[in-house]
Length: 261
Ligand code: CO8
Image 1 (spheres, rainbow, N blue to C red):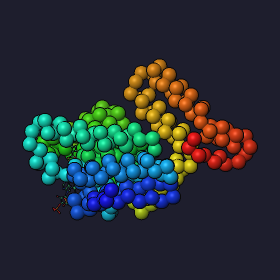
Image 2 (image 1 turned 60 degrees about the horizontal axis):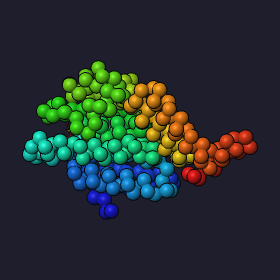
Image 3 (image 1 turned 30 degrees about the horizontal axis):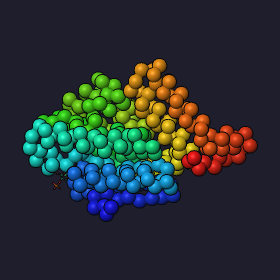
Image 4 (image 1 turned 120 degrees about the horizontal axis):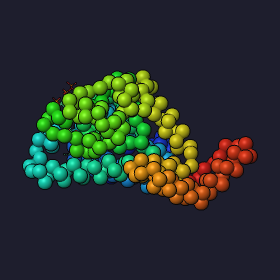
């Protein structure tokens, strides 16, 4: 697919999706969401790509939310529901992808941008980034999973504070409440994100996939069922060639050569 609103690049075994509508602070319009979905499919089916980074072009914004021009044009409750549910399926695709996805939050991550970052596995923010769910200021509520993923990450009280006030918070504050996992100097963001991506990419791909799945599935169900689920995923990794290679390499005191089988 020819992309107009995003850039899709590869560096070694890392796929990088860069939102590229700097004039509107990388706001997510319908076309950008379609391209994001296609880019995720493309990188998912490329066996050379073992980890993905999402980031924004320019220095100002990761993604400043859904495109407010399109939100203004929603004609009915049914259309609004459809609009939100469709976007949610794309964010679920990221969350449930078999590869790890890192959000490199280089600036504003607001509304749908914050929701997108939350659908990623790990969030690394520049020290200059600002995050928030300002939908309330537009007379709406988050619709791409924000009312659900935010309380799961930071707790109900903090989620209600952010969603009911629309307050924007600094990267440091986001780190303090658990909304992001790392804060780094803005000039170092991409290098640090790539360093993290390379580290994950060097691991056994099926172990990464099933660890991610076990965490995602297990944290939504009760502990006993979750541990049973973990055991089933553990069983799956035990059937891989990479389990034999990883354990043998340790005992032979050499680096493992994982193949993804
Ligand atoms: N949509 C469309 N255009 C935008 C958006 C956006 N989300 N954000 C910024 N822009 C545009 C501005 O209109 C402006 O355009 P122009 O140059 O033509 O005037 C340009 O980007 C630059 O923005 P500013 O001049 O406003 O830049 P500032 O540095 O003054 O301010 C802010 C930066 C604080 C980020 C400010 O732009 C802002 O508040 N933006 C809106 C943030 C926001 O409210 N985001 C949430 C949107 S709602 C949402 O995401 C809902 C998601 C779920 C939807 C579910 C489906 C129904």
